[in-house]
Structures are given as C-alpha cells and as structure tokens.
Image 1 (cartoon, rainbow, N blue to C red):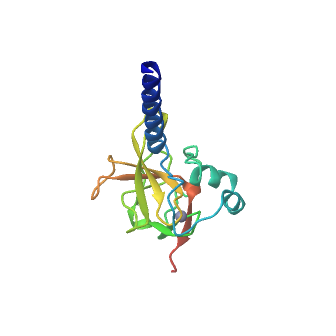
Image 2 (cartoon, helix red, strand yellow):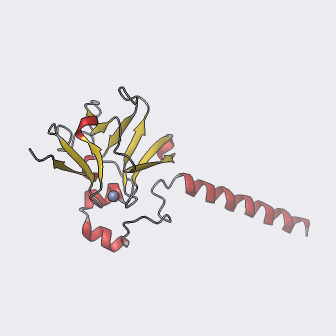
Image 3 (cartoon, helix red, strand yellow):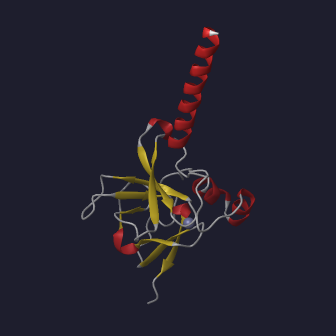
Length: 163
Ligand SMILES: [Zn+2]
C-alpha cells in the first residue's frame, strides 16, 4: 500500500513537470484562439513550405536569406499569415544579424511569450491576429526603445507606401 502511494505521487509530479515543460516550450500556444484561425491543412495550403515552417512551427529562416533584409522603401511590413500590419519601415534598422530588425512593432500587432527551446531563454514574437510565430525580441536594440525585434523575413510581406 505504501509502495503504491509513493508511485502515485511520483506519477503526479511527473505529469505536472511534463505539463509545465510543454507550456514553456510551446510559444505559439496552439490551444489559444485567435481572430484568424485555420486548420493545419488550410495553413499548409495557404502558406509556402518556408512560411509554414516559421509561422506555424516556430522555425527560423537562415540568416541573410530574406529579400526584405535590405528593403529600404517606406511602407508597412505585414504578417504573411493573415496580412495584419505589424511593423513600420520607420522603426526598421540594420542589426547586422542577417534578419530584418525593428525597434518597435505597431500598436497591438504582436504579443510575446517566453521561449526556452534550444537551451536559450528568449521572448518569442507572435501575431495577435493569427498566432503565427514571427521571430524573437531582444533587449540589445537601439534607442528609443532599446529593443530589437528580430524577425523572419519569410513571415512578413512588404507593402510599400503609396507615393
Ligand atoms: Zn498573422
């Protein structure tokens, strides 16, 4: 009887640890509901394989591969998943990291979640409208915010301003 109780307790602790671990390593929070929702099959049809890997599977594109890296025109950078404007060209800067970088998002466009995958503590940046994973935010950016929103270019589309 004593042995059984110990086993049950140990099992409960193991389950709790597993549940906690899952929460912290799942920044895209698949259980959360968003204004824009699609089934997994629909996302696969809507997105390119590279876009799907980043937006829906929290992947990271290879650095220096995005054509948006040197996009210098005025305009808005929008979520490739749902089209919501997320960053203005006015906050874009060259971080020399190989990923498009911004020092601030547009109001309400993104949310952050702690991401401890790959043995690092980072804050993942997700689209508030579709939950898509965009990139990460770090605190080594330029003034005025001191933040560096390190984005996957493949998760963004660029909309140049009308001249
Ligand atoms: Zn989105």
